[in-house]
Length: 267
Image (spheres, helix red, strand yellow):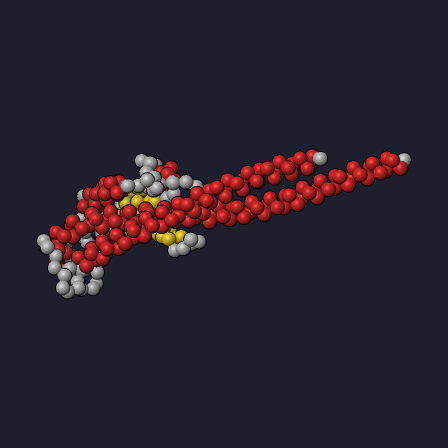
């Protein structure tokens, strides 16, 4: 009977875990649509700004801009590290931390609860990150770069490939990459291209930040949904095995009792 009681307790525990993973999977599924829409909108906005800055960087009048030539002679790196607001999302957070570890001397600006817990600093959640937050952070990065504090500025984030695949990556924002291609003809910048570039970079950095944060949150949501689906399947399989073992143990106990009764009546 002791084994039966232990199996009954294990069944209750696994059943409770199954309900939890199912609920978390449903929550992640409900968030996925909005996260995907926000990711797509941010991607379109950032891509338009990326195209504009690339064309400006190819302009001959912008080749001496500080945004293409780091004001600092040092190699100090600033990384905005975007991790999850919560756990239970597979290897999502660990992949980000493993990639960040390759830049041991970099100054880290964390976004996401897990990143803040890992690297310290002010707690900023990905899910509630606003445009005002984005502009403030973009200005902070630009000021640090132009002031010579940072020689290079980048983002460690997660790229969305599919519901089942997300990849940690580093995206470098500053300095801008000098394009080997010539600027396309037929484009007139007013005022001068260098002035337009100075104004556009803030929008470009802001757009890249918002794109990375929205995409990373979509990746976190997708990773959590897949992790909860896998955990739910494993819990269901464990529950089935435990119930089978419980039924066998119970049947064995009943058979033993019947045998003892029959043997007693025969005596």
